Picture 1: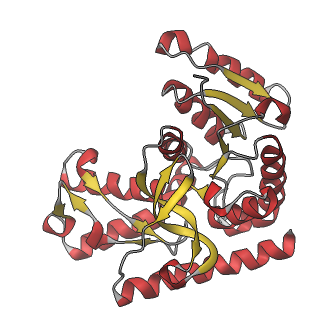
Picture 2: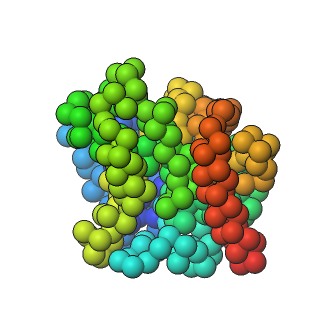
Length: 311
């Protein structure tokens, strides 16, 4: 049985980390693509040389040539400029629409049956951009946002309580950024509601830290943005798709009437399998949750309007 093929576009910190994690988990052979000559080739060769040490039989190839990506099962797009201190995700829009649109179109031409995972920011707008330019079905395009946001929330909760991160389950809806909607009533610690462990005011502080999770890291690094956790989150999604695990994960998926929204990619719980986004799970939201979600979707739609003018 032939091995799966994973293309990672963008050999910067996020893309290189995605390629390294995917190779180490033996999810399939990896093709790392970047516009810079020598960078993907050097990083790809370095990663390939880790495989004997890790004991995995994956091949990693770095290239500038999209023809080498032909027949990919999953395409993970990390290309684009990263945030700098004081820069919002929205500031990235014009540049990254051009970059993501171009690479999504090229990659889809060589792998029309692939499932595409978008990591580039501003996330929800970039998923929409990739959909428009690639020509892939909406269920074949998905954005990495909620997995990362939920991971940050879970990390903070585990640290606060003093329990294993494995026992924390959290859910985040909405756009990736300041308008995200962490659903605290769907957050559990080993099956016990999180409110048993953490007072409401302190939990709200952790929610706010989750919303600002990316900005916190940008402020600390000063010359870049987060990459380990975003890469690990994208690989978790790829694993569910490639192994048809049908994980229920919070991702940026296309809504076709769910939650009262249509024609937009936004963060919702969805089942990821070999067919991509196989089902969006529609939760009953409390009035205040619905209001927050609608506000978040409104912010995403504002970015989508700008994308339509740029495409």
